[in-house]
Image (tube, rainbow, N blue to C red; front, side, top):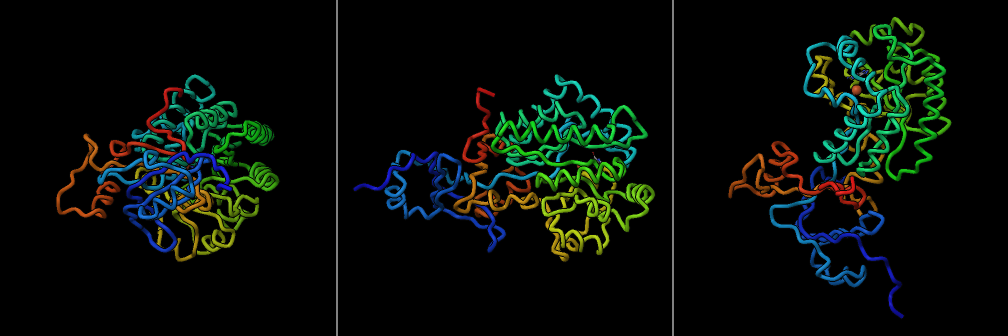
Amino acid sequence: MGSPQRPPLAHVFRGTFVHSSRSAPMEILHEHLLGVDDSGTIVFLEQSDQQEQLAKKWGFKTSDIRELSNYEFFMPGMVDTHIHAPQYSFTGTRVDLPLLQWLTTYTFPTEAKYKDSDFAEEVYTRVVRRTLKNGTTTACYFATIYTDTSLLLAEILDKFGQRAFVGKVCMDVNDSMPQYKEITADSVRETERFVKELLEKKYPRVQPIITPRFGPSCTEDLLHALGNLAQAHDLHVQSHISENEEEIKVVENMFPAYQNYTELYDKNKLLTSKTVMAHACHLSEEELKLFSLRGAAISHCPSSNFSLCSGILNVQMVLKHDVKLGLGTALGLDDVIGNFEVGKEFDALLINTKASDSPFDLFSADNFEDTVQKFLYLGDDRNISEVYVAGKQVVPFSSSV
Ligand code: GUN
Ligand code: FE
């Protein structure tokens, strides 16, 4: 009797794989073979001298193997733990105000435009394409308060094949722009509808996330209802915390019964092991302890923190308290993605360090580790020749999207 018939593998690659594992922050595996099955799962990563046995076991031929050049390597896809899709339309501009003034002057008026689905479709398509092309295989998105265009973002993500969480933003306080806020009950009802309709779509890699904007934009009633909703459906939660000192003062004034900002979220069931809080520059040690106890994660946003002069996150202090810190594993997806271990899904970037328009140069004295570092510090999308999510090639874009 022959071995049971397996479906053919989707990919077999031979060459260099760079990733990190529990035992090593960076592992460079030369002369390896990696196989991906038709569900997008990595089924082997072994030295090339095992080719004969692997070929027999998995039923592939030498001609099925995609051979990388000496200047190419695969690395895991990148994870963006905090991104505002609607703000992509003005990215790179308008960074001349501190947080609260920046929100009222630029951000809320821009987000209000996403009631219009044509406008939303254009910007959301561009942000998904741009981030994928730059190697973001997983992203955790804030949309806006509008349910329908937030669902449209999810549809676009599914179409392009990016792995994502999408949050319909909830806010029932906004004195600066009352047109851009919700009635408390509507915010809860619309969030329920958003979650229900998104789950009904059964997109394989796009999930809803409960998204109260931040303390100053929410009443206690709203936070309470959203915490209950997250608990009832076992959903992820994202928000902002302690980004800027003025924001913290507003929260202290609005919620005097709470000891601190972290307790505001915690007592309303919004600080869980499925929570990602952005910024967190000014948390006290006591608050970090609560993050650690709950298993909640922090998404570190250094570029935003410098642009808006919000503060500097003391990363050493966060790690000392054993609090999860984005990138990569903050999202609680580390059993699914993050490196090339067998059993994980193949989210990967094919890097060409000698792309014809590469933004950096290699010299004969460079060893392979130097080459990887040059890509990490100087490289960009010109070096990312292919992007895979769960084994499916999503860049170059398929002609059908
Ligand atoms: N806090 C509440 N909303 C926002 C936002 O859109 N951006 C940043 N950086 N902080 C926020
Ligand atoms: Fe943010």
